[in-house]
Image (tube, rainbow over all chains, first blue to last red):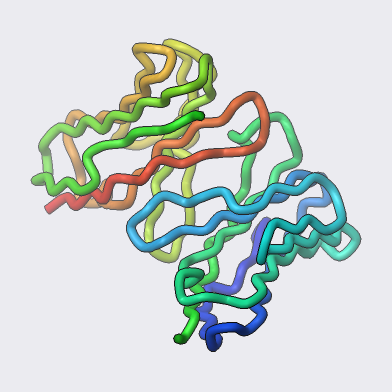
Length: 112
Length: 111
């Protein structure tokens, strides 16, 4: 079983829809959770950062962590064509960013 | 604010040629620095990280090496490139926490 699982997609949704992106993981020691957005041929950009369980909201983005189910989600409300990108989840047990484990990313397409 | 610069954006090199990719960080002191490679379908692979000048940790033994000659400068090198070295190379930095900030990347094609 891989440490972090993420559906590669592509996930195609119409503009304005609510998008749900998800990752599952197996290491119960993970307690730091991040979402990155990566446009084609660009570096990943940190979108959301959460510690332990719960929700965090930033504008149209909501990150949700369920440690009991080992499941994290990123919701995008009122999706825009500019949200089309690959979204990577990342997580760590602590001790520094060298311990980050990344998902392989979900390719999201927002249709105008 | 902190910024990270990585160049070049695109590089085409023949097999057997040397490589030098450079990365610099501005607006912070004593950052942790990282080199990643991203291959299609394989995700992000940590190659090297450094917690200080001259301190390099290698995650994957291979044809590449890294150096940190100055506090905010990180260099990825190879003496002789292989076809398998092709990929998208990313430099990144962090403070002493879990948040990682990436550069814009270098697409390396070895022909």
